[in-house]
Amino acid sequence: MKILIADDEPLARERLLHIIKEINCDYQLIEAGNGLEAIEQVNQEEPDIVLMDIRMPGMSGLEATHHLVASENPPAIIFTTAYDEYALQAFESQAVDYLLKPIRKERLEKALGNCSKLNKLQLEQLGKQNQEIAYRTHISAQIRGTILLIPIKDIYCFLADHKYITIKYNKQNEVAETIIEDTLKSLEEEFESIFLRIHRNALIRKDKIEALQKQDDGRVLLKLKGLSDGFEVSRRHLSSVRKLMKA
Amino acid sequence: MKNDPTPHTVEQIKNNMEQNSLFLPDFCSLRMVFSVVIIGELLAFILTLAPLRMDQQLWSDLALISLFIQWNGLMCSSALCLLRPVFKHYSNQFVAVSSYLVLLLMITFLSELTFYIAEKYQVTETLSFASHWEFLIHNLLIGGIISALALHYFYIQHQWRIKIQSESCTKLQLLQARIRPHFLFNSMNTIASLTRTRPEVAEHITEDLAELFRMLFREDHEMIPWSKELTLSEHYINIEKQRLDQRLSITWDVDLIPNDAMIPALILQPLLENAIFHGIEPEIEGGRIVVKGEFENNRIVITVQNSNSKNLVHRQGNKMALANIEERLKVHFQGKASIICQDKNDEYFAIVSMPYQTINST
Image (cartoon, rainbow over all chains, first blue to last red; front, top):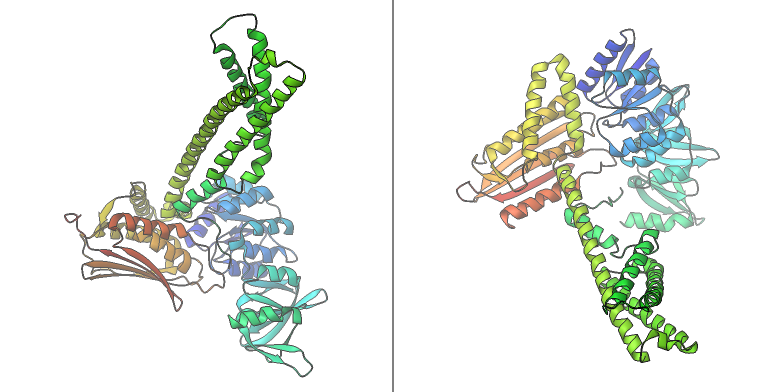
């Protein structure tokens, strides 16, 4: 069995390594220092179980889990935490496996023995009660069985097209596109502080707004910094765009 | 970013509690109805026995008086029960006055009704009241006194409940304002890990933790010399350094502050805790904290500076800590000390300024 230990504190990882070795020295152990590394390791090493710390820098354990569970063959996940009152309530109510640090050997042994895979419903419930740590810093896309992560700060816009959403983002100073399955409505709700709805089919990054251009045919186009093409602003959303640009 | 709806200072918590609770108990509840019936019956006994008599009429009088009182009591309860949703939106003073008036009105109405029925069926003699007015005024006097006593009792009981609630709430909030529970459990985990590999470091960390908590559990109003405060802060940083490793770097530039300067205990530690929480923990690479001390014009200025997290969404912090420091500075220096927080070019500054006092000058 292969186990991934994701925790930002070296000493916390070290302790888990020792204890798991004591439980069964045949277990193969790998480590990750934050949520991003955890996903990378899952992509490369395909562990069976992830021991996931909830609070980690860069990307929280809850968010990493969110991306992992959406993948084709996700590992089983056991959360670890030192103290999170809201998270604990959520875990209890969703019957999700979690361990409290400092973790007891017997408790860990039991958890490793009968861990089950999380489902999306459980995760959504966890996210609702932990807005701060569940906040996504990345959007994940599934590409050939691995998870591609796009940092929110690199995204220009979300464009809806039938069932799919096209993301335009900055990839090493070039504009790249990728497609995900989601709805603009849920993205709008989740990222309302960062993105603004300008049309039935478009959410754009607020701090990338450059200028509004009126076309000859009466349509209004919005220009974004770093992107050459303009985005149509519907009449319904024009006032909220103007208000934002004034502020 | 979402606004944090939770109250941050003890005062706010107390205000919230007072505003949100109605002093009148819920008269719709079975328990209240039962108490009203019992109290009504006791009153009926008192009224019947009060003239100090023992005759044939006693029991029938008791029955009549009970009937009248129970009727009054239950009707008044149901009036208060129905008015409860309306009362919720008003202040307790308003509710007290208006519920008293409602009760008096109710008693007047029921007395009039009773008198009307008695006259109609010509049983006024059995009521042993000479005139209509005498009957009404007697009832209003008795009802008015009993209602006033009851309302007063409910008010006192409500005040007492608020006091108990706010006391327990305040104590917990105050402790949490001074230290995050997270810190304790993370430190325990660090110690558990170090015990295996580096027991001598584990020993030191345990000592640091013990000293920190010894100070935390002391009374709030204590002043300690700067040298002591500095040592405590160093203990705290020692513990966090084990946990965060390379990610935490700190520069101390505090030699200018005189060692004998008296300051409120644990003013610096919560500021360091905040700096770690907002500036270091959210970043993969960690960050840097600069603590700077200045001594000018007989004043001490301590600045804690940390780099702001580059995350688009900031962590929701523990604003209680700052409010608590502010309150303590106010108590110790009577307005002559201050704490200012500034956000400047991705750097966050918390600046505490206070007059220089030694143990002799306080």
